[in-house]
Image (cartoon, rainbow, N blue to C red; front, side, top):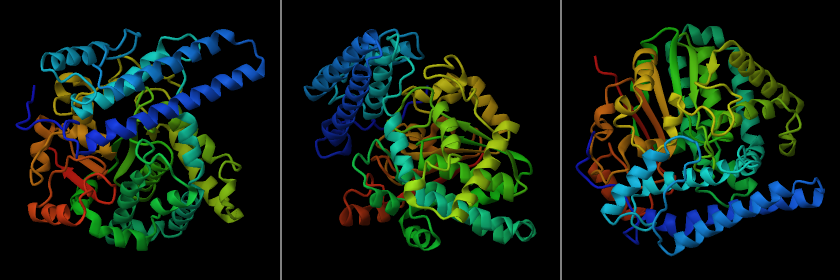
Length: 467
């Protein structure tokens, strides 16, 4: 197995973002889960539906999350994941044993990436061991609420895509115009990642609209904040194939998934280079806002519901533009042009043993070929481009290691480099950064000490497939 020459990030530095995460962010997230469960239990009680057993289980679920929050604040040791019949229990617990031997198995000493993945796997285990909450996503209401506040940007983008249809013939005959549009699409997809519910815990409607400003002027202004920019190299890779397949290793549900679908639609509908897109979700609730199979299906269903985004007061033309685009997506799903590696109806915790459950381990992606050879083989042989969305995927690609900032992206990928054409689209929300000039980083260190974590800066990082 690959061993990095530097240590992983952890919370032992009280000035670092991992420490702030354990001290502040995770307790807020856990408190939100408790509040949501209280609401669910209250609604069950007042409905008089005779679900006493479910209410009792819900009360125990609340107690488990509250105890977890208590233990985290007091730097207790991470307890083994209970055998809930789900995936990777042994993988997590074996790593816990290794960390215990190193005295790095408490909330304020464990590697940040491992502890964060462990946290969500443990929450899943609490629900998975119940009879009535086994299919419950404690973050679903939060995901839907944030998505519903995104109507202004969603309609604006849908109208832009509708306008492209009139230019489709011209686009097909002019690769330069396609390249310009490709750059706009990739930046929209990049900055769509600005909406991350595990980080942005208090967002007003105006906050969300500001983060999602994806117009041309906004993208031009943001160009200065892309610290590594491989857009042109990625376009050359796309141009090199005809009827190829693109894979998205998904990040957040809601608006970000919407921008992923728009990007995929552009590649399939408006270029001759891509004819199939595979979207890779998480099989359990993960990092608050990550896409599950249910989220993927629900996104299309909600967008086809004319009432869902009514709060943004769209015009009839805007509503028609959105319906037109999303109806095409639904057709693509039905025809297999858009697909998941598991059925859309896969329940939470389902798909165990499939290649899809790899995405909810704590393992870096370096040794994908060893851990899940079938997944590696599929991507190696069949994918023209694998797009890893968001910050967590970037952390796993690089191992969340304290790499020198000017380390090449390929070096940080370890043995994964060269396996398949690989693109990472990431707004910076964690400390690990590679592929950036030392002088640029030094200047940012002096002018904006939070540049690695505040989501203001981004990286578009590409690694080619080896011959």
